[in-house]
Length: 76
Image 1 (cartoon, rainbow, N blue to C red):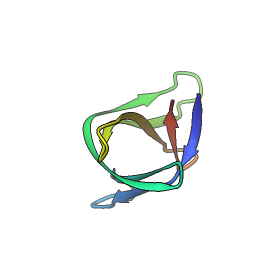
Image 2 (image 1 turned 60 degrees about the horizontal axis):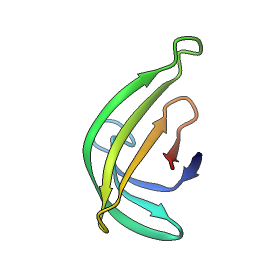
Image 3 (image 1 turned 45 degrees about the vertical axis):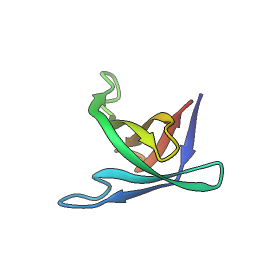
């Protein structure tokens, strides 16, 4: 299942460069990125920046930034 989430990001040379915190069930959790890559859909050419993160409680999450929609999602 994929759902929309709120993310606080580091914005260096571009906006929303990588996540710093995610809002899970109404609580902000610090996250550490341990893997990232870019996916591109062959038909629509839409790009996603995918991040595998660990939150401050030790849980792992797969989140991504849809570059076309400019929104963050989490895969459950």
